Image (cartoon, rainbow, N blue to C red; front, side, top):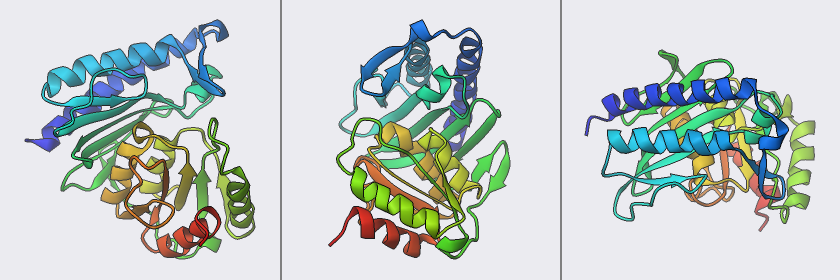
Amino acid sequence: MDVKSICREVISISKETGEFIRKEGQGFKQEYIESKGIHDYVSYVDKEAEDRLVEKLGMLLPEAGFIAEEGSGDKNQGGLNWVIDPLDGTTNFIHGLPPFSVSIALVEHRKPLLGVVYEINLDECFYSWQGAPAYLNEKEIRVSQTAMVKDSLIATGFPYTDFKHMSPFIRSFEYLMENSHGLRRLGSAAVDLAYVACGRFDAFYEYGLKAWDVAAGVFIVKQAGGSVSDFAGGEDFLFGGELVASNAKVFNEFQSAVRHFMKPD
C-alpha cells in the first residue's frame, strides 16, 4: 500500500469537504440544527459532509470500512477502517465561531497509518503518514520544546454529555490554571491535537472523547515527536475516551498531574 499517495488524496478530499462546509456556513440558520442529545448537535452540513467523505474515501480504498460520527458505513472487523469526523467542532460551526475541522484517519487493527486534520477557517492542513514527519501546509512541524508544566500552554475540552467525572476534572483544571501559562478551550479536539503537533500548545487532555475526534490528531502528534497516553499512562487512548498528549519533554510531569486528579490510586 502506498500510504503517502493515499494521504495526498485524503488531503484533497478533506479540502474539498472543507470548502463545502465553508460555503454552507455563510448562509447557515439556527433552524437547521438538530439535537442528538443534551448539548450534542448536528445539522445537514455534518451529514452531507460525511456522505461526501464516505463516497470519495470508499472509491479511494474500497476494502476499508468506516468508523464515523454520523454513523455512515460499516466497520471492517478484519482490518482497514477510515475513522472520520466530517465536522469536528459542530457547536462552533453553528455559531459561526472558529475553529472547526475535518478529521480523517486510516487505521489498521487500531494502528493509524495516516492522519489529516483540515482546519477550515485558516485553511490549515495538518497531516502525516506512516514513516513520515508531520506537516502543516507542506512545511514540516514538530512539537514544542517546553520542559516544564509551569511554562506550558495547555488545551482541554469540556464534556458535553458525560458529566460523571466533573469534580476531579474541575480540580485538575484549577491546578493547571495555577501552575501553567494557562488553559484554552477551542471546541475542536482534532484542532487541539494539531496545535500540539505544531507547538502552539504544549499539552492537551480531555475525557469523553470518541475515536473520530482524536484518531487523526493523535497520529499527527506522534509523528511530530510528541507523546500520547490515556490518563493512567496506558495505550487505551484511541477508543478509551480519554487522552493526554504533549511534547516528549513535559509529558511525564503533565501526565502525572492529570493522573493524580483523574485516576487517583
